[in-house]
Image 1 (cartoon, one colour):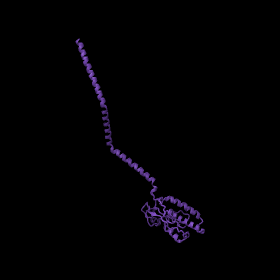
Image 2 (cartoon, helix red, strand yellow):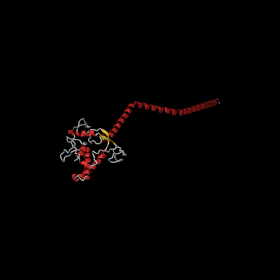
Image 3 (cartoon, helix red, strand yellow):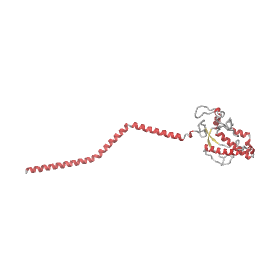
Image 4 (cartoon, rainbow, N blue to C red):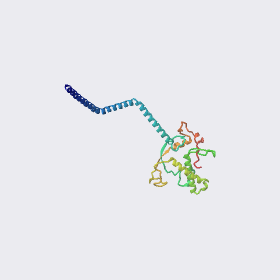
Length: 274
């Protein structure tokens, strides 16, 4: 009987201990649930810190790679820009080979000048008008080449020749002097019109030309077109270059002489009235 009571007492004590242990385990489980997020956050921060430390350790390598990429991209962009704009590096109106200097430019306002275009067309056959037009031509004008050979003239002097010959053909027809006309005057005239058309398109002068009531009398108010200010090659440098008196080749330091240009036969300058 005493033994039974002791056994019951031990069982009760054991049950209470088991319940306390179970409660203790339950409480620890709750603590673990509360602890896990913080622990995970700590681990994440730790991993991030390690990554940052490694990145800092190799920062010089990353910076070097970025610099090399930047240099490579800059080089490619510059190369493409130069390729696309290689033709624009040649001054408009220069030879496509790049031979010759880049001429200085100046702002020029056009003005009517009857000494070149007399209103009395009969004066167009005078020596005075011819001499006036020749002031725009370089010295040494003439064919200078054996007929049938290939030779090189200059576009500017060819254009002046065309304008002069068109005016002379017009004046001969207006003055009824057909006997003075060459047999090919018709085709010559049409050739000059087409040649000048393409020359105008090539230079493509985009000067703004105001038309005002104070325009010159040659064409009347609002139609003179003499008030534009044009960006032009300095003509005072062009003629000496053709005559070999000045200028340096843009691709070398060799001074261009008359022997190398007109007199030497590199350029043939056609007579303005031929």
